[in-house]
Length: 137
Image 1 (spheres, rainbow, N blue to C red):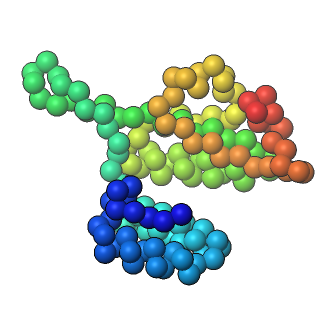
Image 2: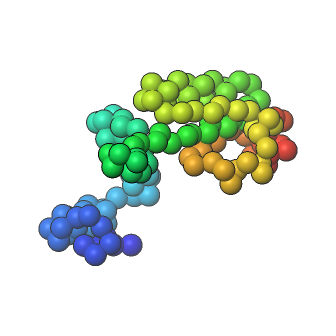
Image 3: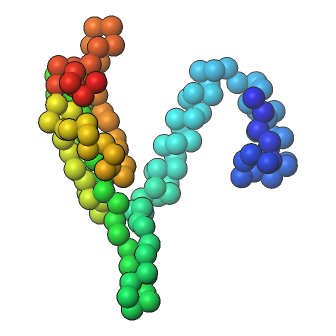
């Protein structure tokens, strides 16, 4: 797979340089680089502003609506639940509206109403869902 100018935000020179580097990387290095770049964007403040939808109020001035985020967790020992609670608090710090729920308490018919969804779940055995995620799964 090669990066081209037509399918990326890079100019010709950048695309050529990236393709030269990508050709020398192993799959493990590409995966590591992907995670590194994702984390650097988040830490650099790129993802810190809340996502909003803009509509026009009656007065003609823009009115913003904060997006609702749902965080579901499935946990056998409590580790995934702890991560979900940490994510919830970080999202609330960024002024998002957050709904945190255990997967067994969430009605799957409500999935169609969700704007943004994070699922944090553990697995056990041979990739089986935790007990409190079986019904959802």
